[in-house]
Image (cartoon, rainbow, N blue to C red; front, side):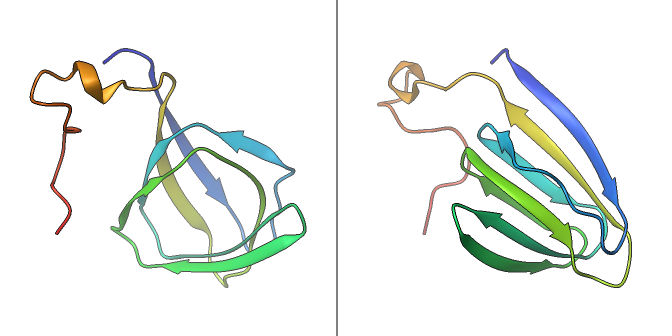
Amino acid sequence: MSGCGCCDYHDRPGDCTTAHRHPDSVMVTLSPIRRRLGTEGKQVEVELAAGQVRWLDAQEHAGENIGDADSHVVFVELKEHLDTRSVGDGGRPLGPTPA
């Protein structure tokens, strides 16, 4: 699949981002993170250990490092939507099957 990008992100406690958009992505935490994410008047706090791998649907948000340490994550951003109907195995997406 073409159209992927990688983003290496670092920040410090108290650092904030302005509202920005991510396409569908895979996030890998290289350090523990504690963040407050906000969009459209809603906020959620997220805490993840180092070494976590998470799928993120496309989204827009602003964020703040609310932890007591620097955070370091890598995003692999999918720039194009994958049409799973063309995968050739009955339309199932690639990757692990949900339990």
